[in-house]
Length: 79
Image (cartoon, rainbow, N blue to C red; front, side):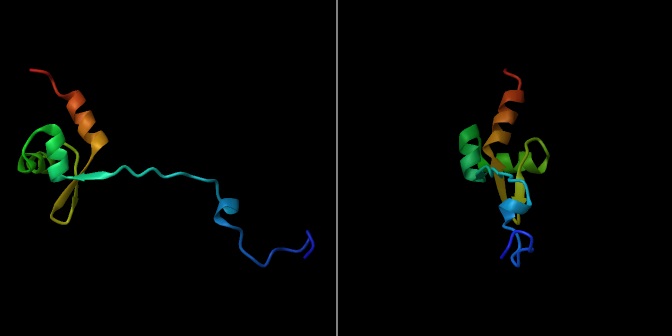
């Protein structure tokens, strides 16, 4: 096939679009997240339901990003 003829094949994804990297942060379950915060899992779930801390509800289960827990801890007032 010459350079002037179009390819019969579609370009590979890396040729047709700029490369983007997705970084997915591991999600913690209620038990793991509560252990990091040293609180009861039910307390953490209640806080998530009330909007006090960011959580992701998947069906009946709650999942938490470690970075969201860290942000929550940093914004808490000491005392």
